[in-house]
Amino acid sequence: MSERIEMSYSHLDVLQEISNIGLGNAATALAELLKKKVNIAVPHATFLEMEQVFPLVGGLEEVVACVNLSFDGDVAGTVMYIFAEKSVYKLVDMLLGQEIGATGELNALGESVIMEIGNILTGSFMNALGSMTGLTMQTSVPLFAFDMMGAILSASLVASGHWDEQVLLIETIFLQNNDQIKGHFFLLPETGALNRLFEALGIPA
Amino acid sequence: MQLSPARENQVSQAVLVTEIQVGIAELKVAGHPDRLITFSLGSCVGVSLYDPFTRVGGLIHIMLPDSTQFNTVTKPAKFADLGIPLLLSEIRRYGARSANLQAKLAGGAQMFSGSNEKFELNIGMRNATMARQTLKKLGIKILAAELGGNRGRTMILDTVSGQVFIRTAGSQLKVI
Image (cartoon, rainbow over all chains, first blue to last red; front, side, top):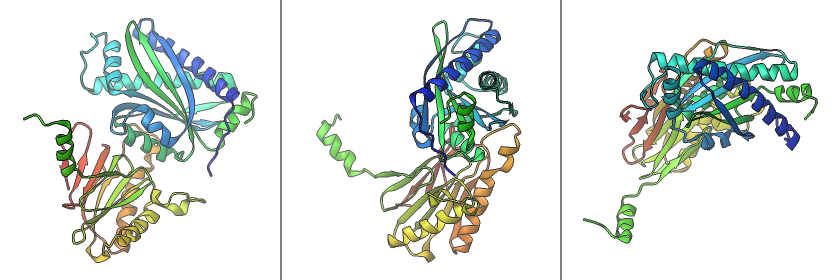
């Protein structure tokens, strides 16, 4: 059942490009929300085996916020946005117009703010993917968790049935003035979905 | 009193207990005085087996309940139905006796809030149910369990005492 895609540089280039466009849209949406200029850096997009993901994002027990969105249609899969605990608090402060450092825990308001951001980011990414490929994808209602990274990641993988396949990991950094907000974006395609994506982009795997 | 680096090293070695990590979809067995640890169980379930007479312990990190729903199984320890019997045979190779074994369970949480059909299959609960059933079939008694809820858990089995420690984000360590 496992699908192993041999990634060439051109495939990764295309994915990097999709990431740049998708997350560029996300940054614009975020800037509108913050009413401030937001820059975004996409240091790299990589395809990884699941086991390799955990140490990259941080320790298994590291507390993170995760927004999870499933999509269906021409291609199916899950997208996830993960923010480290510190970045979560910074984001809440920025969105509520507070001084950075004011937030030290996540209350109901903070939770809805983060969920909204995750929704916007994942939604912008999916829109970019849709318009580049011409494929139709419907996204679900977002899910939210704030807990140990390992527990969140493995639970999402199990629930979406992707575990022993590869995932696309895109590291992103949002910059507002001097404040860095680091996030990790994951695309977990269902079996066969990657091939369909590449075919739609004119570069069959 | 300040200890010299060499002396400090000796002291720490004298009390050093090896902590053996059990990854996702893995199982491991250890003898006294070592500890077995598995990090961040979410919907996954950790099952520990312990023989208080030989002080041998085993730990497995299960992801899914039922292997029969899959065509190919590359990692039997991923599944409750295959992994627990495998853990039993492994711990018996280390000298533990089936009749002595005590099981403790942790995990099986529902990590996400919000509604989504795919995620409402509640894998955590199904993992927990299958783990209990499999242990019952094998005739192993369950001594303690810390299952369900919506928090991730790290599980540590101490082969000296047979105690299992549960760590959650932002809470005190719990012993079961």
